[in-house]
Length: 253
Image (cartoon, rainbow, N blue to C red; front, top):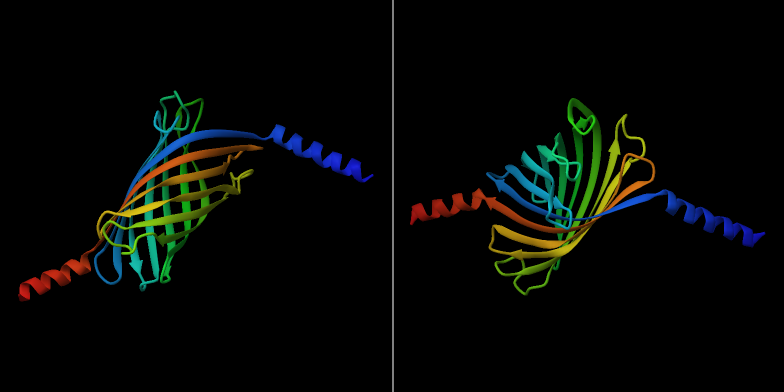
């Protein structure tokens, strides 16, 4: 009896693999993130990102533009509210594109040890996604919510940590969950795992190079996306409080 049970499990396993369809893509993501801090509590968030696909660089997948404001409760907690505009190209070799308006709110936690830095955030997005009819952008928008949880760990590899010329190993994971009336098959939206490095260009600018694996569920039965992504990012963090202190000191001299 037991052998028939194992045979049934094998048949079901291979049947599910045969039914499910996984699309594989090779992409590259290029982005610039600017975070400014103007006083002890208030700052701004600017993010510009371009996503390419088809052997990493042959076609545009989407361009994203984000503008927001941040409130710093203390050195550990930060709250951000922002709006992202997504200009997406959903199909290869088809000229139409679709817009998405995405307001979002986020709480962020920063912690550190003697040999590492940790960043976590929880983000809620309200997504207004333009729909297509017969491969043409329509005037209708689909509304859904998305919840994102992100955790990043940074481990310095250089003796002089977090300074100009230093290098850190970085790894992160982000889980996405969808909610809304139109969400049927993909409450689990996607998971992203990142491995890479930070290179400190100076005190205000960091270059990030690495690889992301994105595994995503489409809002359709048994359809998935598995993407290999090369990611190049520049993080620009400016603390105007320090400049104000330096200016004041110079004036006194």
